[in-house]
Image 1 (cartoon, rainbow, N blue to C red):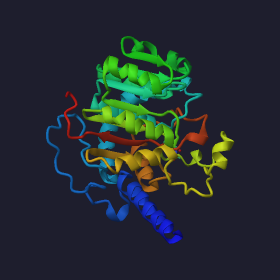
Image 2 (cartoon, rainbow, N blue to C red):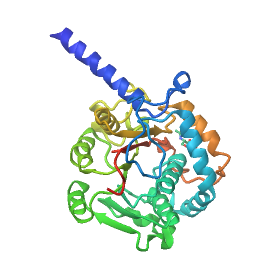
Image 3 (cartoon, rainbow, N blue to C red):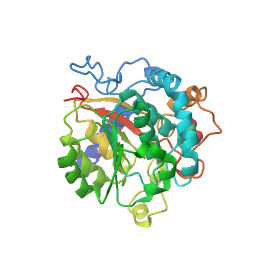
Image 4 (cartoon, helix red, strand yellow):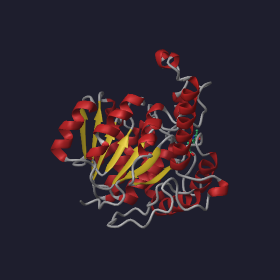
Length: 325
Ligand SMILES: *[C@@H]1O[C@H](CO)[C@@H](O)[C@H](O)[C@H]1NC(C)=O
């Protein structure tokens, strides 16, 4: 009995490690040249007319740096303007500079028609999403939250909000169904709400299955070691969110839930993260590359060192479906 439990545990542990290793976007030195991750050898996808060129389940460090180098070169000046404008509204923001930049560049590159953001909170990321849509001259943003803190960033959004932004107040567990029947599903999901297993289970089983076209996803706080052993929830701490039991590279509860789910999908691509806790070499390579294009003094993450983790996991779903379907 005990032996069996132990074996099951080992199998799960290995499966878990594979999921993280395979889907972790980028390979370490010795496997950098391997073209793909978990679904290795994926063929060119049929019917993919999307703008983005991210087509493998995970992309390697070299590919990631190269693609973003091109995007920084192309849109870096626009991005600096956004950072300057966002600065005065950044005090309560809980995102890092690089992941905000990557979000802006990815939206410029992929030109989504409808972005959904759960949960903007104080709205720092919302400034970057809206700016990218405005600079594209294309696309709408719908933001969902249980509070209206996004107003803290309104002054920094300027007229980019006009005709482009809608805010939905309420619990997304309810408002999702209303919006989905009203406007349909988005082609870009920017997820950042409650980082629990239960939250992750809800949307991978209720929301993701409703996606029927190529969709870009970014999930915040996947690789944020501060969410294990955090102090803002004593009960969670007692329940096992203890940094001594969880290595710092390990994804959060929600992140583990979603990456486990991804393991079972056949059409996942463009998986990567710049989180230092997950891939220090990738973070360093990306950070070195971006310093050529970004002026380091212009920062938006300054006041919250405890969350500056660049913790976002980026991926795409239904990569073989046309975005206009
Ligand atoms: C996230 O990236 C920004 C910009 O490079 C950097 O200032 C910050 O220290 C990074 N956070 C971590 C934990 O590496």
